[in-house]
Image (tube, rainbow, N blue to C red; front, top):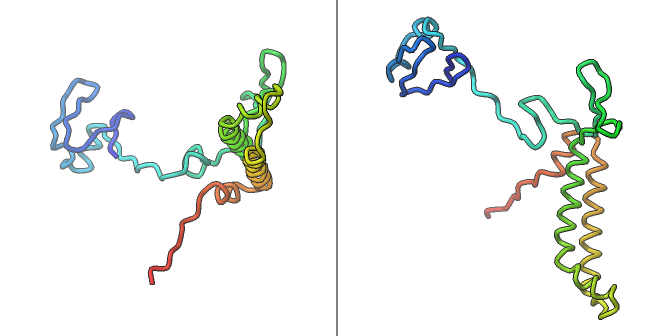
Length: 167
């Protein structure tokens, strides 16, 4: 992409430089030297990356929780004087799993509340459903915790393509 003072200049559109000079829509036909003389600089498009796991191409997010430090390496403390911890990908994913399980359980919470209030016991089918949700959540959390590399976590969280036989 072409840039002028960190501003993207789109092909087929006129643009104005810092001196107030408007350049024509045909500027993309200029030679490399003409473009450079007008302050245009070519920058390759950034390489693609999965922003769930990377900050930018080749710059992975932390897998584990990290103690936050300032530019001098000193701990960053919260208002209560506790070390600030930046959650790593594993903690973030476990939080998502817990939130999903909580959302699924919420639909049947009223059965449990009604039973706790002594009104009517929850059916075994409801209890089995809730246990299955918790078991699946626990299994997913264990699988996340077992990941020791980013590649393992990516493989766990990225659904594999379904291969079908066309014959």
